Image 1 (cartoon, rainbow, N blue to C red):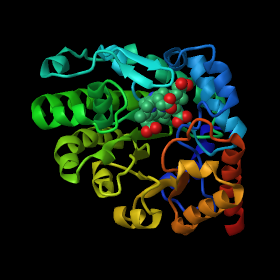
Image 2 (image 1 turned 45 degrees about the vertical axis):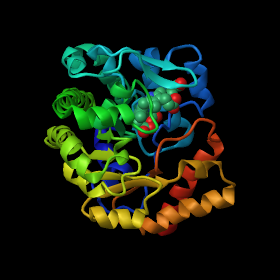
Image 3 (image 1 turned 30 degrees about the vertical axis):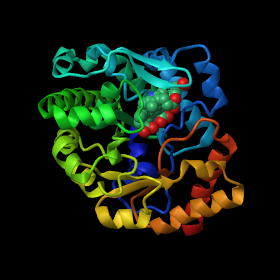
Amino acid sequence: MTTAALSTSAFLKACRREPDGRTPVWFMRQAGRYMPEYRAIRGKHTMLDLCATPELAARVTLQPVMTLGVDAAIIFSDILLPFVPMGLELEYVKGQGPVIHNPVRSARDVERLHPVDVHESLGYVADAVRMVTTELDGSTPLIGFAGAPFTLASYAIEGGGSRHFKEAKRFMFSEPDAWHALLGKFADIVADLLLAQIEAGAAVVQLFDSWAGQLHPDDYRTLVFPHSRRILERIASTGVPRIHFGVGTGELLEQMRDAGADVIGIDASTDLDTGWQRVGYDVAVQGNLDPVALFAPRDELRKRVHAVLHKASGRAGHIFNLGHGILPETPVDNVRYVVDLVHEWENDRS
Ligand code: CP3
């Protein structure tokens, strides 16, 4: 197939809210530890090496496309990779997740962060995108992605994952100038990185603001929104659909739409129907099965998949996904079962 075939893909049509009998499905974190094929490669390489070696990243990206039959690929990468050229010492620690050994704790630390030329220091991401799009040859669209400034800042300041975001919020509340300087730096790099992925062939991009739901809407408006908007405005001129996603964002959906989104992610704690009503039917939505439903008995899982599909009520512009990423240890057969259920549903309706 040629790239022209992409325009008829169910996923791209849904991103553009073009009517189509089919509901596309893919999963956040569809390449990962729940897959034996992934573990086999990961066992031989560190997470950073996997991301920075385009041949390996491309192979891992394609695994779920082959074994699950999903309607979109997402480039294998990580939102935290820009930390490395910025001078933040990133390590993925087994059983703990990402650790930043020299977290940002002062205005001085923000000043010290290196400017980044993404083509030079993160060129491997675009290289992997190029390899995957060549391999897919128009059969399946590829999603490029990056982390949004708030979520990146939370890792950079906390030094890793966090429960209460105490350090990040303390910095945000007490050093607003340094906070804006930090988010501004992330915004520049992230926009460059997304544009580089688009130039390399990404058909859609997703901005992950995973932890934005931790914020009061007033804080999101003044301390986060302008930076995410700056990124998404720069992408708008390319015409490539933008997915804007976060968890616990029920109260932020309208603002996230206004920051820039062709598709809004709806997490598992938000009703898809009300969420879509809130953002308006002139944007597409993506979601929103609870990732833990994939551990439930088949009957229960089927009911829950059908409930999400019913909530979308066949309206143009629904992309089936989870409310958040696939968890490690998720049974692969259940993931495949969900893909089949969504695809059969399409057949029922056409
Ligand atoms: O979706 C995909 O298949 C593409 C790959 C992808 C990864 N990270 C690979 C990864 C994507 C889209 C991400 C995004 C990401 N990374 C987010 C936003 C999405 C979300 O879940 O909210 C965040 C917050 C991160 C930061 C990050 N990277 C964390 C918190 C962790 C540890 C948690 C975990 O699952 O281990 C990572 C590591 C990471 N990124 C892994 C993978 C496959 C696990 C690495 C391993 O040990 O094999």
